[in-house]
Length: 81
Image (cartoon, rainbow, N blue to C red; front, side):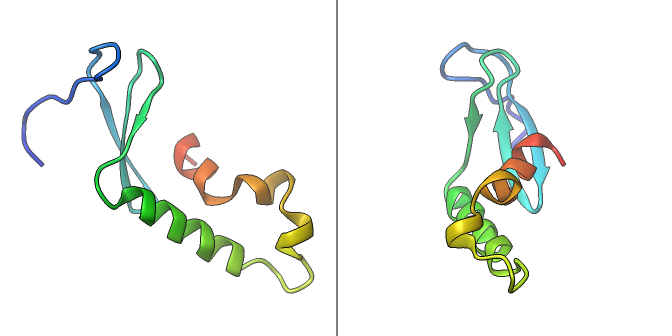
């Protein structure tokens, strides 16, 4: 990664960089925008698929994809958890 400061294309604030579950994201503290580099959206989708695949057998993701399951890994990544 270069030493250049990343700036938000919307509000020109300096972006904060976070690593969440192996995915690096840039977040704007000004407008709360989230920016992903090439391939990071696919990493998030793969992580969500792994999360759903690890649900207990008695939980059907087709009918239980509500509440905490609906949020899954994507919420955990962006919430900093």
